[in-house]
Figure 1 (cartoon, rainbow, N blue to C red):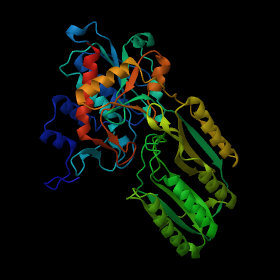
Figure 2: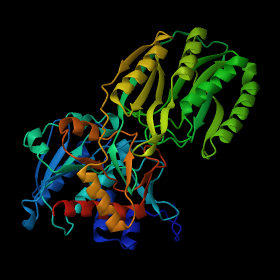
Figure 3: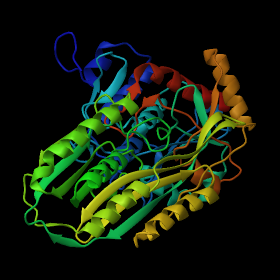
Figure 4: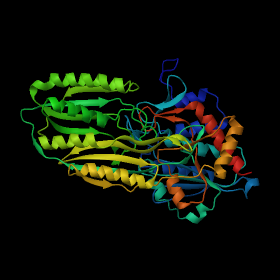
Length: 511
């Protein structure tokens, strides 16, 4: 992250020394100004206050519901009082990973060495979805004619689309919101694509009881996997990326085959302020084991072999590390033999990754339709807790995936709790809105607009339940790579076409 002057370049200095179109410059300014705001899922109070203050300063009608969702009404321009009304929507929260913790310190956006991407130093960036918020705020000052615009900024999108489900404004009821031309969600994945569908998803929480015994006479070692690429458990799940939980469980199984070991603890995945990040692929994991004193050299040999095997299998995991350390603090308890076996067998048998991926979907070709993410593990007290997120293009198939997880857990006498799932969204590809957007994009950019159905979750699922007849699209605010990971980036060159497409849609719909 070094400039020619030998200093780290912030987004602020970068945007000041570069020339951008006014709308893009405003987008980057809002994105930069929001960087200090903490907005972890279910903790979006500061972001909500920022948006309400924006509405107040501009004199826009606005409201905030009990879930923290914010609505603001952008009046139609003078000549477009009778033009169709349009809902534009983004979400307030972000996935908080890395250090310093973005949930406590906000984000520090900087420019990568190529000068082509906005990144954050060792944390998630919040391009998902502050990019969308920034574009919508920038649009307010765009010199175009438009009908009345209804902005909705939801909360807790990253933990199950909770804000969308709970949408309940006092000033603006569902009938008012349903009486609109279309809804455009500004949370798509890649410039040049629009999403017309999204996956259903739900979490499974597994609790396995364990019994403890004394560690007397044992050596305590810590095995650590870290530096994995991680990523979004929906859009990146089909890519060949390490799941640190599964890899570490397999390594421990190998060690156990050659040497007696007892598990002391297993820790993986992120839980911040009580919020479980189940929609991120596990990039690191660590386990403390109790072994006999003379087995360390054998374990090192196994780790050396596995390190080579992992790097050969996952060639893009350049920063992945596997290490063995002495446990610095003494622990008096370890799992007994049976609990150790049950724990490792359960972690090895629970599903992770793509369950079904089709190559010939009639709309988009290749499409992941079913998956599950082994996301979080904690061993505390007399139990091990595992949290998973499952996804499916169809609501019914999601239930089947979660039933299989329950069946696996039941073999080990583990209990399973399930979160309320959020719905999928499926729309025809021949809607007037998509046809209109396709023609507009090709006319403006000279390229075909691609149709996409994301394996990620979008609030389109809830919007379709609320307003089944309203046409909807999800468009990107920029191309974002490695969302939900510490290497998340936003491609600077993609912001301009994304913003121009958004403004063109708003302007042309009003004609």
